[in-house]
Image: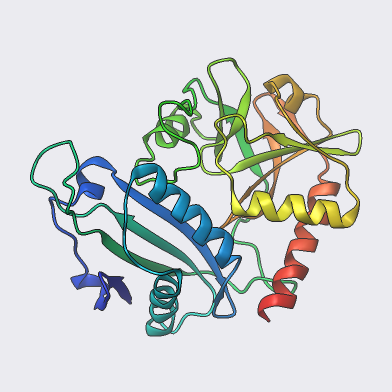
Length: 284
């Protein structure tokens, strides 16, 4: 396997970054997890826009064009002979002099790592074997005025601590300081109540997931009523169905949330099928 490190393809066992890299030392780095289907990245433009938003929030100027970044991703896929994969693209601020305050002339570190996944689309297979279980975490979501939710960074401690608190559940559901549902540790949350699809709105500390965006677009195409708003755990518990979305899982139904179980995910299944058809049409 090969990784792409600062413009060069390197054998995975030889791929390294400096121990003084700020992404390693402080989590001072932007990250995007992408999905490649049939050799091409799904929704590249949306991912590139979100990566830039993270870099802007952190004040990182990597100096690379969108075309260059995409070229590095595709070069890594080709070097590993992968057409269907998970891709992790990271941009750290680079090495530093030892001060918490960033150096003005830091040289960003850009790394691309890939992992094989099954074929996607209509004729593909899921990466998960069964519906998820979820639990409300006691760990609060970090507020936007502390760390902007638009910024996907190397620092996943908020989600890691929430997953630890959630125990054996597949996903932890985080609330904000006012007890409103924001999403999962590594996913966006949807629920269906009386035929209407609901998801936490982006005025809360909610990361704007690419699959979240795709599902909302597909729901509109299918004529599924959608409401983005502020919700409490009780709203999920009284819902007809709940599902989670992220780049790797795509659309994953929830079988149990805290002490509540769900026996159906009809709207989620329609949207999962629509997403698979979209992927099939675009990439296969």
